[in-house]
Length: 230
Ligand code: 5RP
Image (spheres, helix red, strand yellow):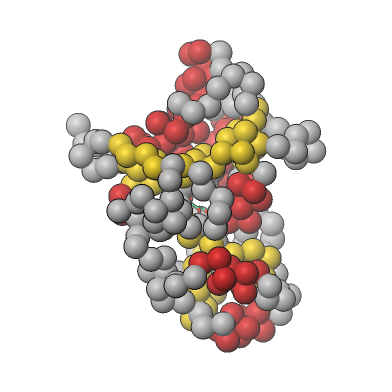
């Protein structure tokens, strides 16, 4: 049977969840497998957890699977979050937001003691930047925000969906920005989020604590020390 590296990584990440935890649920096709596995553990082992989803999509999936949900109205700390990424560099900097959920993903990650990133090998990069960087912007004056991002050196493309503009769960737009190879991710992140009109950007620096990599041969690799990704 064909191996799905995203499934291998997602299911492995669910092993790090234990009874009583508050768990952040990521978004995307890799996080999907972790969410399904957590639902199995709740059903089969009686695992007692409460989860905070990072998107309406993941919230809907969790409800369908019978996973108990909570929110920041009830808890202010997350024990572990499991989420995917579009790119990961050797210093554990990430590009995220391919699915448009970057704001809630970063918000939940910033509240999390442990941030598990689940990827297949194709997401590992020596330098970030081949994947256009998603930037969430307020609809008001987004054209000016786009110009400001372009002045930072990014070629910014408005994200569309089949029905017109792609609108995030927070009612905002996404500009996908090509900056080329990113030499200094924390500095670029600071400059982008310091731009008026920007709500958040998909550069995640200093947040990932463990990278779980599903391999095409069925194997798994885990890294907890930045600098050790090849
Ligand atoms: C969504 C994300 C996803 O984690 C990222 O796009 C990876 O997705 P996938 O696991 O489907 O490859 O950041 O906003």
